[in-house]
Image (cartoon, rainbow, N blue to C red; front, side, top):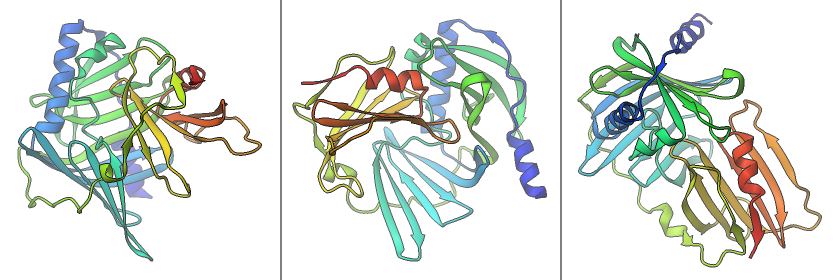
Length: 310
């Protein structure tokens, strides 16, 4: 119990209040943090907390030309490892049935949370600078991203004072409630001690086909959100392919799945027990559409209610 209390104290939120800064200065801070998390070699250990669930993760980032490779190893619970490149991630898990491999599009992970070109975020978030504190033995600047509307969660970041590498991050929901928290407990910048680990053979793109003439039309998206991808893919426990669309404002992400509607389909609206994810399922013509994401219900509902059959 003592170690748990120590970890909780390490990631407890400090006083974040600060003054709003001009958009030009805000864009500069966002770019520094985004570049550092992708282009800087680093290795360390961070703690992730979501509700009462905590995990300790070892991370290593290795720049590779215009891209980067990173490796995350979960240090508690079921043995699990995630290997990431610019466009995909592969999760390796070991259990009673041996090794399992899961491939996903995208590779976002702490501290690489900001998009590659983050300057446009100032249109939808205002930035506030707080005080300087110590995280993982290093001085870092508190920075709060405050949403300008109801379509995105807020973020509280702490960037290393000289490099801009995020050392701490908190996703904030309604009523200032922390939804998801990360904090380094140990980090070394400018160095990686392990040799690069090659990605397993194959790619998630091998099983994906671009969507052409979808039966569902998205009439409008929440302000700031754009479509990142629309593909047909096989999902576990599905006999046929489904359409998978991903929308994002650069920080929040919303997925949409389109498939044939089952008989006696019932519309569903809900939220995960920890409040991070929101979901809505509804019938659009002859199709079942499920919209879910790490975004407020207003954003998820906006997408779901702005659909029509082609």
